Image (tube, rainbow, N blue to C red; front, side):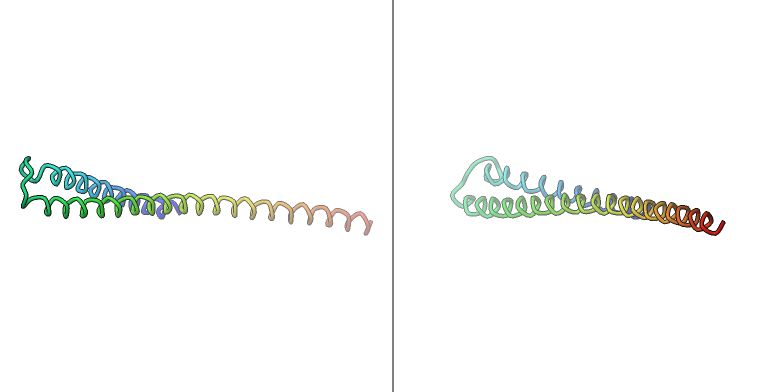
Length: 114
């Protein structure tokens, strides 16, 4: 269980790094598009900057979706961990209840036989 948690944490870290890279690229592309590539706007450069802006917006949208999915995955991992802890607690309680029943019924059977 501990090894799985470590590998899932590593996977989440890699995914977050990927999202960070996409966001940096998206913002860099948006900034370059606004400057027109060389810092001045030209008539021929405008369609290119609009295309770059659309591409940057698309990359930003994808990065936001990736971020949301990463958050959901981390929440599901936390829920799974809590579920396992709860299952262990319930199994322990069940064992304790069974032991107390055996002691209770075993003690009363012994008293009735004497």
